[in-house]
Structure formats: C-alpha cells, structure tokens
Image (cartoon, rainbow, N blue to C red; front, side, top):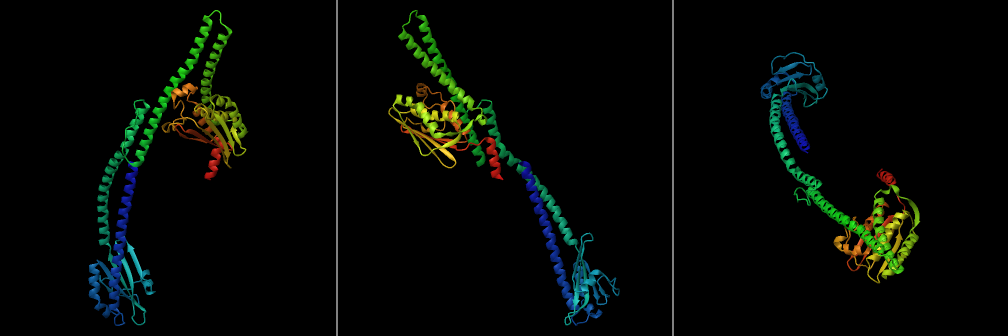
Length: 472
C-alpha cells in the first residue's frame, strides 16, 4: 500500500508538472508567433501602401522593421517578386537573390512557419499582397530567437524539479505515516488472532478504524464468541456422553451383580432384572448409534447413494414406525400430502434426518398434543414441514440448536434420552442434499421445521460444471 500510494502520487505529480510545462511552451510559442505575425502584417501593409514594392517604400518602413527585429532579437528580410532581397535588417544580404523552398511556397500563396529548437529560433514567411490586384508582389521573412521562451521553460523545469522533489519527500513521509496508521488496527487484530490461536484469549478487544475494518473485527469477535460457545458445548457434551455411557453400564453391572449375589432367583424377579438390563442396553445403543451416524455423515457427499424415491411413501413409513411412541405419549400424528413427489435422494440418510425431526416433535410435545407433517413441491424443490404443539424453543437458542453437542434443556434431554446430535445429523443430511432447513418456534406454543431439498440431486462436480456454464 505504501508503494502504491507513493508511485501513484508521484506519477500524478510528474504528469501534472509535465503537462504544465508543455502547456506553457505551446501557449507561449503560439502567442509569440501570433504577435510577430500581426506586426509582420502591419509592416507588409505599410510597404505596399502605394501598390508598389520598391526600395523607397521599404525604406519608409525600415525603422519599424529594425525596431521589431531588435525587440524580438531577430532578423527581417524583404524579397520582391524577382526573389531579390531589397531589405535585410542585418544589412548583409541586400541586393542578393534568395531562393528557398519557404519563399517559393509563399509566392504560391502558402504561409511558412518553421521552428528549430536546436538553433533556438523560429522563421515566419508572410506574403506581401497588392491591395488591388491581390497578387503577391513580395515576401516578408522574419526570423526571431526563442531564447526567452526556452529559458523560461528551463527555469520552470528546474523549479518543477525542486518542487517535485520536495513534494515527493512529503508524499513518502505522508504515505509512511498514513499506512502505519492504517495497518495499526490489523496489527492489533493479528495479535488477537495469535492469542486466540494460542488459547490465551476469550474475547476480542474492540479496535476502531475505518468502517470495513470494524466490520471485520466485529465478525472475528462473533467468530470467537461462537467458537467459545462451541468449545463449551463440546466439553459439556463430552462430559454428558461420558456420564450417559457410563450410567447404563453402571446400572447393568449393579443389576447383574444383584442377580449373581442371589443363589436362588425367582423367574419373576429374574425377568424384571432382565427387562431393566435390556432398557439400559437400548439406551447405550442409541447413544452409540447417534455418534456413529454423525461420524459417517462427516465423510462428505462422495458416499451419497442417490435413487429416485417416492417421498410420500417414505414419510408414511417414518410415521408408521414412530406411531407407537406417539400413542404412548398421546400425541396425534397427521400427514398432509399436497401431491405425489418423487425425488433423487439418499433414502437412508434422508429417512434418518426426517425421523429425527418427527421424533423430536413427539418427545418434546405436550400430552394430547399433535404433530403435523406436510409434503409439497414445485418445479425445482420439494418441501417437508414438521409442526408440533410442543414446548417450543427459546429465541436465543434457535441459532444454536443445529450445533453439535448443543441441547436446549439439558435435564429434559437427558430424561428423553437426547444426546444433542439429532438436529446436527439432520442439518448435515439436508446440506449434503444441497438443501436448506429453517426453524420457527415460540416457547409453549410449538415449533415448525421446514426442509427444502432439490428434486434432482447434483453432485459437487456437476454443480461446478453448471456454475461454469452459467458464468460463460
């Protein structure tokens, strides 16, 4: 940035000064030529006043020509129509014949202007025109020095060089100070990032700067807050899972030890203990299955097994499997299908995701509540909506419920056998299908999850090809 500011500023300054000097040269030169030409026309008119170009008529204007030549540090020559020099302010060529391209062109009606920067002079040739016949009866050749213009231009260049050097130094100092001020917030942010990476920071200090940087700083602060929340949830999950994995094993061991410690056990007591052991094994198995499902989903969409599936039939099967749980809690299951929907999906994965949504709607519902599942589609997507009359989700928790290990009501989740992985699994499955999931909920009023998935699945490679074609 320092180099960019310095180079661009220097280029602008050089271009400006160069243009200024060039403009001065052009305007000064044009003004001087115009001025000399005006005086030349006056002299030419005076020479031909009586309609005759002669030594006498030239002599009448001799004083004006000499004065003009002296003022402009130049030389004036008058040539008649025979190319004979009848006046030379230098007094060197009078009486001689002048043959030159410029003079001949002048007699043909063309003014001639020639500039020689090396010799530092300008030569202007004007015709002397008869006032009546309009014939060219002679030529006025004027040569004048450019020393005044070129010397002034040199002074301007020298001055511009000094000013340019001073301005360049000021620009370098300004650029250094400005860039140092500009990157100071980045340095502070970098320190915060390094400290966070090393594990020495929980929050980001507010760093003030330009608007874009403050936005980046705020985003980083939110990222750290989210990372800390995820880390806290992860630690809590590890603790909870460790406890939940250990609790069934402890219960099984206690029940088994109780059976082994008794020599004679009645069939009724034996059966009661075995039922309890079986329940603990099922609980352990559910936790392990959720963990395994999450690990499998982390292997990306390369293992997607896409087939054309009748979504109406899939959802009916899911509701049929969950009907006993709903009846046990007195929850009514309702399925609304607006049309027959066939989509390209991974049946196993999507079935798991939708099962999680419906099962949560049943578990976190009220007694004698209801769960409504609706299926609809348009030309591009199909939509599954799962609504319930349950306990709802607090507003502050709605952005976190899809995070792994997060549970809204930890005590209630433990009571219902939740591990905090169900919604994370569901979201992963939806994303793998290039879909989206949204939640709307109010506490004590119920929750609605809406899932949108393309009817035709596109692999990542197909998606990249299609995006490239769209760009073309």
